[in-house]
Length: 452
Image (cartoon, rainbow, N blue to C red; front, top):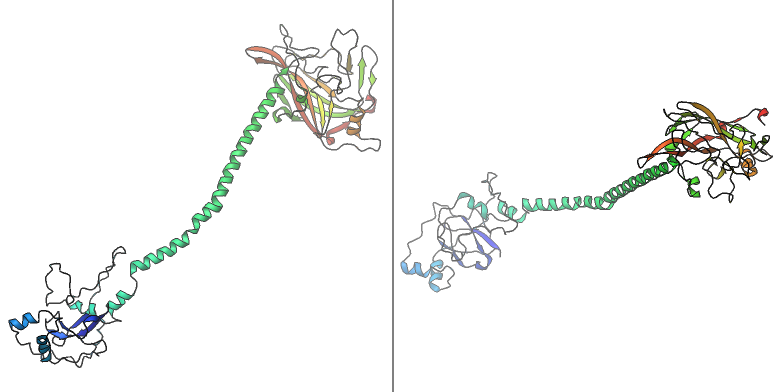
C-alpha cells in the first residue's frame, strides 16, 4: 500500500498516511491536531508553511466534542463542522535536507525474516497493549519519512549489502564448481591408472623374480650323471638324470650367464670363458685313429678352477655334450649353442655309450680323452666344448654356404658343468648346473690350418 507524505498545517512537521485515507481527517502524531489529508497531486511548498510563531494554539475542546472526534475516520456532521471552522493551509514540498544528515541505521535485516516497515505511530496499530506514541519525536524521525529519492527511499529500493554478498558468493561458487568436475573426469582417472599400472608392474616384477629363482633352482642344482659322477671323497652318491625335454630350451636366468673374459662362480667351480675359435675337430672311436669331421666346428675354451678345499671333481663329462639327433634319445643334451634364438646346435660330434658296453665302442673328441680329467682342490685347467662338425645344416647356418654368406649376430652357448656338492634335506649330493656364455660373430677367431 502506498504512503503519502505531507506537512501538518499546525506544527509544520512531516507526516504520512496510507493512500486510502486521502481526503479524510487524520490526527497529527506530533501536535495531536486533526487535519485533512490532501490528495497526492497537492503541491508542497515551503512558502505556504505557516510560521510556528503565527500558528495559534487550538481552542480547548469540550468533552463532548473530544469524545465525538475520538474516531478520526468518522464522517459525522459534527466532525465536519469542526474541520469546517479551520482553514486548511496550502502544503508544499519541503526543501531537500542539507548533507549533514544524522547517521543512518546500517543494520542489515536477516534473509530469513522480512525487513520491518518504518514505525509510523500515526497509522492504525494492532491492539497489543502498547502505549500511545509520545509527542517528542527524535530529530532523525523526519529523515525516515523523506519523499522518494531521499535516504529512506534509497535504502528501501536498493538491494541490501547481504543480498549483494550472497549474489557475489553464488557467482563465485558457480565458477568454482568446475574444479571438482576436472578432478573427477581428468585427474582421478589418471591417478587410478597410475596406481593400477604400478601394481601391475610390481606383480610382474615379482613374477619375473620368482621365475628367475625357479629357473636358477632348476639349472643350478641338477642331478649328477655321466662317466664320472660324484666327487672323490668317500662314497660317491648321485641322483638320476631325469628331466623333461623342454628344459633344454627354457630361458637361462641372467645370474647364470656371463661373457668372454668374465669369470662366473657356480658352487665350488669358477668358470672363465676364454675364447671362441672356428676349427676342424676330430673324433676318436674306440682305439682307432682320429677321424676329422666333414665341416668346421665352433670351439669354446673355458678356464675351470676347483674352489673347494677338500675334494676333487671333473667339471666336464662326455655325457654332457654327446651327439644327439631328434628321435635318437629321449632327452637332448643340455650343452647346446643357440644361434639368435632361432636355431640350436645340440651336443657335439662324439656319441656317448656307457662304460662296459660290449656292442658300441666308446667315442670322444680329440683333446678331451676317454678318461675325464679331475680337478684337485685349488687346481685350474683349460677345457673346451664344440659343435657337431658332421651337422651340415648347422655348418651352413654358422659359416654360410659356398657363396660365403656367414651368420652375423649374437650367440648363447649353454654349457652343463659339474659344480661340486650341494646339501639337500641334510645330505650332501654331487650336482651339476647349466651356465650361459654370450658372444657375437665378431668374437670368433680363425684357428691355424694345421689343426684341420
